[in-house]
Image 1 (cartoon, chains in turn orange, cyan):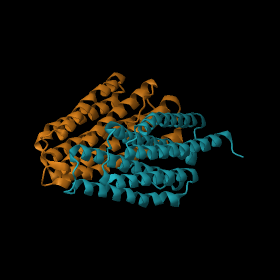
Image 2 (cartoon, each protein chain N blue to C red):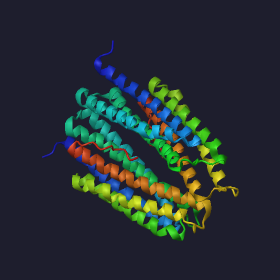
Image 3 (cartoon, rainbow over the protein chains, first blue to last red):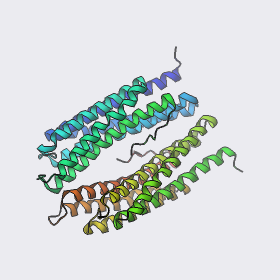
Image 4 (cartoon, rainbow over the protein chains, first blue to last red):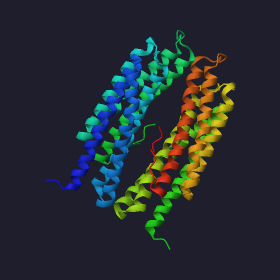
Length: 218
Length: 218
């Protein structure tokens, strides 16, 4: 039987998994808002970010309380330290989904994303959702093999990102600078979202194996 | 007289101040590399980022060791938790200086930044250096008033950023999409650098007063 202290650690982990699910759903909604120029969906994402911030805040507080009251050492201490960092990554991923929704909102009733690059953003959205879903599974299962897979899974996002720049720089790009700015920033938001998902996975690898990768997405 | 445990906390704080100085100098060099299309300076910044990553790693390890061995509570615990977060902000600021240097390197021997927006980037560089210098002072002195000033100091960066977009979107913008992409991303890097400096200041306010602001730059 687990004591209440380890139950608390498990419960914090459960909150992180739930947070990953929420972030995934925010990203999915944001991508639809962007591609369909759907301002109601964009507003949902923007309003929904508060809950993610609150969850992060609550996880941080609980971790702090465990540190202060239980004074964990070794693996338990690592679990707490890693939990606050994962919460920080996930919160930032929520911000990035919100940024995407805000671009959709700003250009409404127009589409922020022209026809030529819609497939790229559709794919970026799918990859982002897959990465955060996998990150959630990795948090839940602490499966190191699966965690390591995210490193290569992320290559798909880099490929999409490079493809976007090729489109923007093609002589045939007819949309001018404003759309180029939007597409550049949107591409950056999806790329950073993916970087943070990889970062979550690396933190779980560190937690389980003690191996330190440079854990900050650059 | 201070015991060795509190000496260690002071010493970690000293490392953070030094890290802020290094990041400021990286940002200053990156801005010069960008404005002068100076590839040797850009390479210096790119090579120098490793040291910042190593410092962050070392601060994290030391904080972890203090947590494990000393099991601090109350203010000391908060000091340690805040120190690792400040180290994370500063490391990210170093990454952003490196990103700027990499854009300068990529466009060499050309200038990444055309004449019309040079003054904006010169000013962005100055504001960035001022913000990180002030953040360093705030870490050293824990001066809450000064920390709060960064919130308004950062408005200067937002203003520069908006000005950049106006330049990009002016009918007279003659440089095409590639330069627009560079300028958009560079503007974003300076803006995020400033956001993280504000985040450092907020963390110090939290440390001293217990007041929680939403501490993640969005």
